[in-house]
Image 1: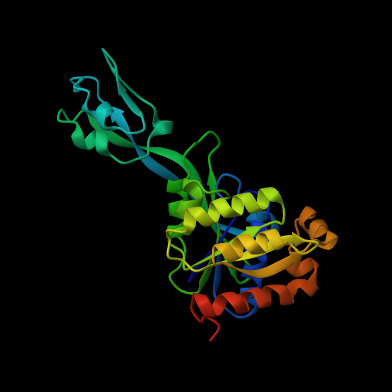
Image 2: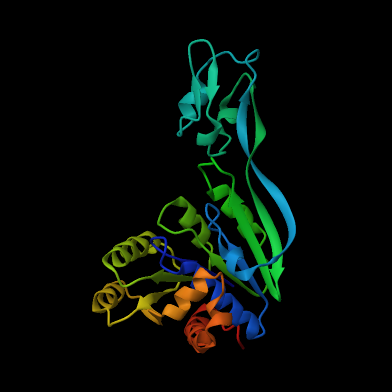
Length: 285
């Protein structure tokens, strides 16, 4: 089972929920994998402090043009929807950073002047934090397209046990890539106008996915009827409310987990799992 922990915006506490839920499940005796798919700014390792294991580079295929074979017919540029290859009067220019690795340019090249070569975009690292399996992706500086790396991280996740996917924030392609193949979607938000606005954007984005979902409301200091009404309108339940607590903020600033630094909150994550587990598959049985 894969549970994606996502949010409409950054800074809502998504990683806090993903990390601490993972630790609870390990403590409950389950086989658990934490997969950090927030590859542009992974930070799960700051809290879990995993022992590093295998690290490998990840590449995508991009076009390389042989000018001697190219007849400047223009088909490659005409079929590329991302302007990653452009045919000029005397030569063909490629923009690898715009390439989406579809391979159509090489496919339509009747002169067979285009070959596909590796372009390295980041790395995937495996490790362990106690009994918790740890997988993380890290996009290279300057790279603009992260979904291929996110897909590579997800390929590393096991078929057995529970995988907690720490998804990228927002509603764009990286976030959708991370959550689209999961069994349950946990949306983390905060009781602010920005939090509600971006939660609604996320609910709109995932409405076409037939994935059961719930909401965690973080940093709660008073009743938030506006968020409750929003969730009710979309038919989504608020599964947990995490209080505005200075102890949590202090633990976070020190790179400590709520699980180890504020033991009183262990029951909160146990209660959260008890609400997810019956919907997502009965894995505690």
